[in-house]
Amino acid sequence: MEFGLNQFKEFITEYAQRLEELKSTLNELDNRIGDGDHGTNMARGFQVANQQLQAKNPTDIGTACNTVAMALLGNVGGASGPLYGTIFMKLASVFKEKLSVDDEMLLNGFLFAKNGIIERGKAQYGDKTMLDVWETATSFLQSNVGTNRYRDLMTVVQEAVLETRDRVAKKGRAAYLGPRSAGTCDPGSVSSGLFFEVFVRALDGEGAIIRWETLVL
Amino acid sequence: MGNTSIVIVSHSKKLAEGLLQIASQMAGQSVHIGIAAGIGDELGTSAPAIVDEIMKCPLESPILLFFDLGSALMNCQMALEILPDDIAERVTIVDAPLVEGIISASVSASLGQTNLDVINAAMEAYQIRKILD
Image: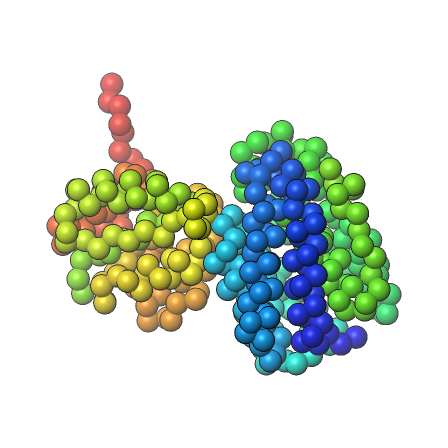
């Protein structure tokens, strides 16, 4: 499958909308185990990113990814600013000057992004962070080929998000809570699950909308 | 190479301004101290804001970044990746307690000590006992 510049722009527009819809859900999760602003931060960051994409109208996907990264770094205050900023900086390095990217390059971009998250946040799989979702998604795409893999990816990602609920946080503000962090889904994992939900829809136009608000609360 | 410069990276603008006030009182005018703190009126740190403060430091001076909590470190690291190499190589992110570290560093820098001495002074602040019994 091919993922073009216009699909990338639609992806950012829809991700910003979905974050706005799920803002209170993400804030509520973050309230329970963090500082309560994950939804507000992410919605604001991607709203600015979307506006800057429209205003600057970049002509290749790499430049578009860089525009998004800089918008996030300047407008998202918590850990999600540098972490999501890193994701888009890594994607920019793989998609440099590309008008369109294929499956292999997409996977490469996601692997770079995942490794960037590890370097930046020093988290490991199972620490109850967004890495839990990125690790699951990238290893699924690495070991599954075929046309239905993106549809199946959604099921795998959804499970990965829900699996963070019972884990004890080892990183970030939630780690201060120790065992009391168990019982609440990690908000960064939910926003990453949403990332893949919106990405699959932008890619093939058909992925389902996941009712995160009823699943994760 | 001039005196070591200092940039305070904090989630809170008020916290950074208070530290700047205390450090300036100790160090006088001979040390450049900048702050990259808050996002607008809200709590948070931002890599572009840190980059801007680093660019305001005197040319060729070594620069030390002091940060408060977790994600402030991530933004310091991102700032170094965004900066051109010749500027980034003048910058060190210091693992030190924020209040005592900044005060030790600004005093050491104001005495014209080497950058390494300033860094050591800041890191040694972890060992300073406040209550001696």
